[in-house]
Image 1 (cartoon, rainbow, N blue to C red):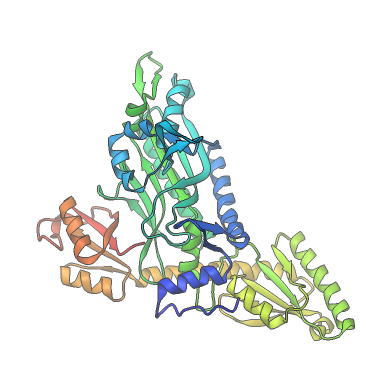
Image 2: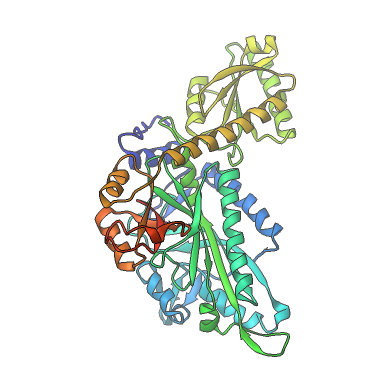
Length: 477
């Protein structure tokens, strides 16, 4: 826990790696690109996963599980899909000491195996809609891995649904994007921009893709969740048909949508500081930690008895509290450790506090240190946790607003990307070649397409041709 954390302002990538390590979230595995998620990191993921799971179930979705291994022939059945994932695919060629008759794919995503199953499950309009989600892992051979953000294996959820009409599929696609936005804002305290992806950024095999995009503290964008309208592409590839009320055989319409452990990385980069992680209370594995302070055996007995009672009362009140009563570790070292782990509130209780019937409350987000009466403490801490949650969202929203700009010329566009960085709204002519050229020149990509607005009256920042759309550009992870 004595590792030094690089300053954000000097080396943001190094700062991120240092904070993840110092916060005891994860570490690199022996296989390049894979990670070991440590208990504190996994508890954080559970606190993201569980509210999402509830939201899915509230909207009628159920959980299932599909295999990790997929026949290679399945991937080949949707040409655009296999082309899009080819560089990332890991292939199993041997098993049981023998060469396999057909290679197996370690799923980079599950549209193909699920499409195969749905082709058997869907026969009649009475079978629709199918609303299934799975919590699983995926494998994508990342060239530039980074803990949580891009790993060869990652944990995620992927929803896959089947509908009778194009309208129902589109409604589902947008609904799930709204759920992702709700998670990001209400739980992670991260404001997002949401919208449709450009043609080049669309998920392989989808007709169109929507996403939520957030801005990290280094001015780079992070795609936090995607929702894909797959149209009838996978229904055609896997023959997902149903008999309609009029007796006619029709192709179904499908969607898929997902988020991953990347959200843990988003929390670190959106809220962390030079001391370590700063966790939003609603997803913090430990919301309040109590550190007892004493010198003599008599003080120890009295302080620990009261500390145990306080933590028990917090747990009963629905606060995730923990008593750090470890021996042979000084209070200062405990403060340092919990600060790096991002625990929202730290309580200090010593003999004088015991006499005064109070604790000292230290906020992780701003470092303020104030007393609070032991009587009615749970309600007081609930209010302070709510204040921290709201404050983190407000601070992140302010950063997003101050780092979102408009550019009308290429020179202005490039200057804004360099300083101060962030999102830049600009018009472009709608051509894939133009998007690629802008990326090659500036390293910025289209994160989402914006409402048409006055795009027709503007000209493309690169080609000078009449604009076909306005887009939100950024350099991104």
